[in-house]
Amino acid sequence: MTTAKYKRIKVKTPGIRCVEHPIRKHGAVRKDRYYTIRYRLDGKVKEEGVGWESIGVTEAIAAERLHDLKMAHRTGIGLRTMAERRRAQKEEAEREEAVRIQHEKEQVTFSSIFNKYYKQTTQDKDPKTCKVEISLFNKWLHSLIGSLPMREISPFILEKLKKQMSDAGRAPRTITYALALVRQVFNYAKNNDLYNGDNPVTKVKKPSEDNRRSRFLSEEESPVLLAELSKVSPTINDIALISLRCGLRAGEIFKLTWNDVDFRNGTILIKDTKSGRNRNAIMTQDV
Image 1 (cartoon, rainbow, N blue to C red):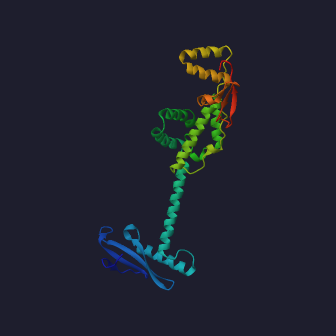
Image 2: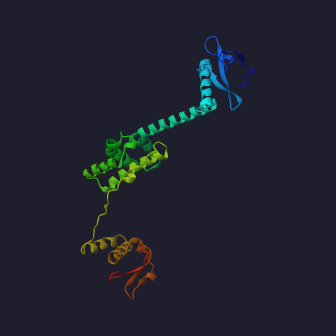
Image 3: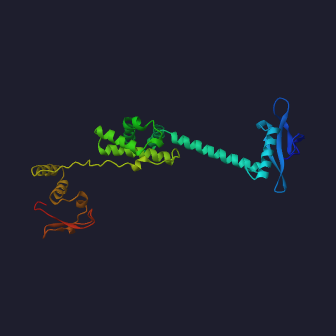
């Protein structure tokens, strides 16, 4: 701030300087005033601004700042310049703001994050998937963890969720889907800087799943099936016959060439199998 445009005002306190703003008023009559302090630091005269009256700085406050700095110079304790003081105040304000933001993140509830997650999901995922997820949330997640802060959702609570769903007769696959939804909501929160804690789902064991159905054709049923397939397509009938009699998977049948068939020995060479090894299948007479 240059003083050429400002009127110097005499003050009583030694070491305090004051200038008056040429236009701006503070109050009904007096023009706004700006206070600076002058002191000696390491053998050199130093002058630093304290502030305008319009933001609450008075001659008394400026004198107090000067006194604090001089005490710091004499004792070696505390901040020695206004610049250091402002820097410390800024750092303290930043720490307080970081604490406030962290506290807000720790208080955010699962439901509030899920609502944001679901809004994004409806834009990115298949409508059927969205329907399943909102159903799981409404039926199972909302009542148990919806009102809980994210930081309070522990592996123990998720184990309780597993038990509730299992006791209600839900399949392991459905329970796994519910846990996956919780995991995705936590990941969404972390990726969007809404929560920075751990994801509790990583510490929860998924329920064992075996949703497969074992069904074998009887000796009486297989001829009936083949007869019906022959009416639809001779090719489909042949594929089913080879699968039934030789135990080949569909992919293995589709890869067969005539070079793989050994009529003399009654075998079929199966290459590039799931195990990574070639094998021979025995042909029956009808094959």
